[in-house]
Length: 131
Image (cartoon, rainbow, N blue to C red; front, side, top):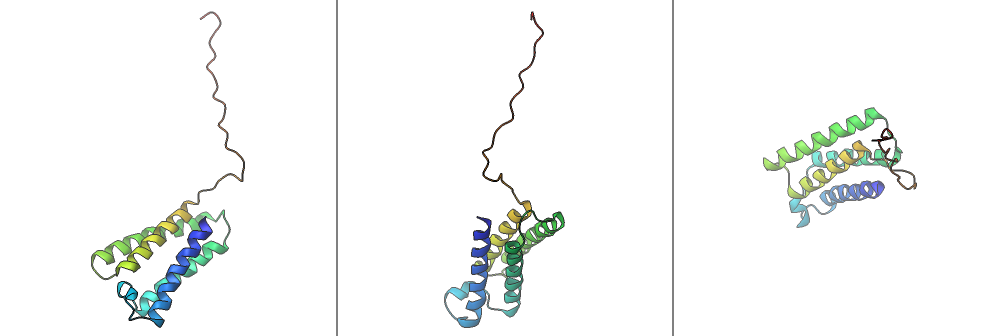
């Protein structure tokens, strides 16, 4: 499931990069930025997503902390630039999606390897005889 999220996010970012180069005057690209600096941001975020696809879990704690910091910084930057009308709608949605994906990767929820989950037996209180 995580690789599917990474792959779809990469596709969205690369679609915006290709759209800004090949069809910048299309109606869809009116809602996304066609500036070169935004394409550098998109490509760098795609590189981080490829790193997430290549590095298998469990990842190091330093990488996860840095990824969490990137997620929080990206979410804050997205909200602040969108509300100041410097970021367009589709870019804001894509960056918000990426901040959630990076946050989930930083939390790195691990599951058992196909084994059914069992609860530990609840110990019953022992009463003294005769009570």
